[in-house]
Image 1 (tube, rainbow, N blue to C red):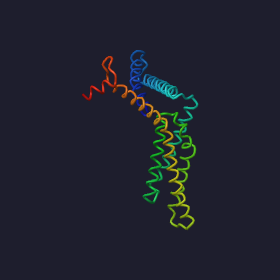
Image 2: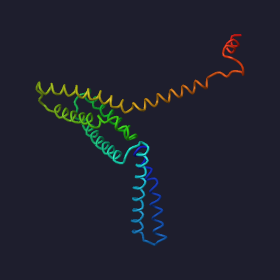
Image 3: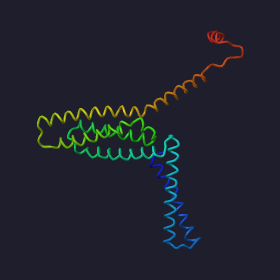
Image 4: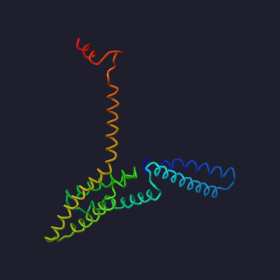
Amino acid sequence: MSEVAHSFFRHFLNIPIMVSSWFIFFFSFGSGFFLSSALGLGVYLVSNISIKKLQQHRIMKKHQLTHSEYFFIQNQLKEANKKVRTLNSQYLKVRSISSFKQLFEMNRLAKRIISLVKGNPRKFYQAENFFYAHLDSAVELTSKYSLLVAQPVKNSDMKFALQDTRDTLQAINIVMEEDLKDVLASDIEQLKMELDFAKLSVGVKERPLYVKGESEDERKTSEFK
């Protein structure tokens, strides 16, 4: 279940709890409208926090993460999302179709990796280079490239620097593709194992049934008669 789905589930569950609490405080205890509303809101907040903690605990248990690991990874994801937003802000600053495509591909790869790690926080350890180095380099170089390309005057040194930056960004794109492959590696390996098991199961089911005492040679002989 995604973070959005978790949040929706909490609100879906807690709103009826809050309304029920208001009725109980107002009619059963005669607390008055404003006090009942405040108490109902308090029940909502406590319930929401409690369910959120329970959801986090289940995620940590499922992916075998400690409390500190889980919140460290969540913090890294927040920082990564900020960097992706910085990348998104560069779209209107690039001046060529090739640079736009390059930036689009970089954003696509970054968002895909972040999405996979959100779904399975343990995958963070398969993409540490992306979070610690590659995404930072992409943001820094893209920002500097956008700044230089917007200048009205370009000498030979600046043109060389721009071309070198484009080449480096293309190399970063390739590296980020490898980061994505690393994140997906365990899923691909698991899929291969499941396919092997499925093929083995199908092979067992497709074995012909023999009459008691009948051999394979006798079956072949009877088929050709």
